[in-house]
Image 1 (cartoon, rainbow, N blue to C red):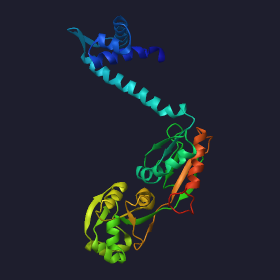
Image 2: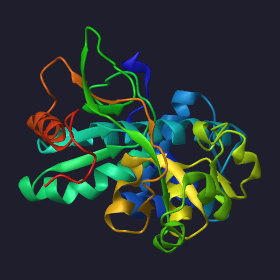
Image 3: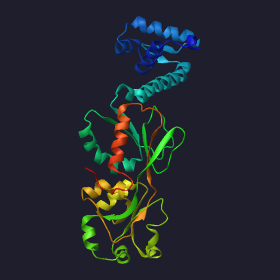
Image 4: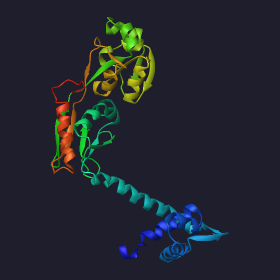
Length: 299
């Protein structure tokens, strides 16, 4: 099949001429002569068996067939570039590909990366924010943080972080609610609602019907931000609110019962790591948050 495919140079010449509307401009961009560009396009036209361009003054315009073929060429070249990006980490033996949900990446991982890079200054961390990956693709990911045990013949998972949902709000609102029982506090401040949760908190019961609502959001980080801006009370995973708590943009309301959340698991391939850095980061993550440790920032 490869003998029947046109050379890549012909596709590049065609794409440039089609995009720029002229042989001369395509030649300048690709640092080739006009005759070379013309020759490459003629070879491509022989391969497809029909003209791909029409002459328009001093320039060229795609024919009807050329318009259709241009979409295929653009997709082909885009696929090649995407493929190169996927394997880019292999050029750097200090790279590691860590997949985890976006809210957890922003709230827990990013605040700790400076400490990690202080220990390993050449480390190149690729954070892949995908929710609940179920498998290791040895090109796309080295480590996965997930709420599921992904152990199988190809992967090993470690019960890694015990998480919980806690009530948070702005420091100013926390001061107003200081000393109030939860049943009174929810009537004094509006609730920030999770679009995907049927209740703000199970223990609230019918009292939730009497509470005021300020905003409903599907994104956990946005609920933390809304709480920081004084819009009300939010129930969010402690791990996601970690950075905001540490910077005192939000306060934890200890009078509100916390809710246990699914354990977060740390998974890696059973095969040899893609780079030595994968094991370095795996070990570092295990030290940062062992199952029986608190969720605060570790030194």
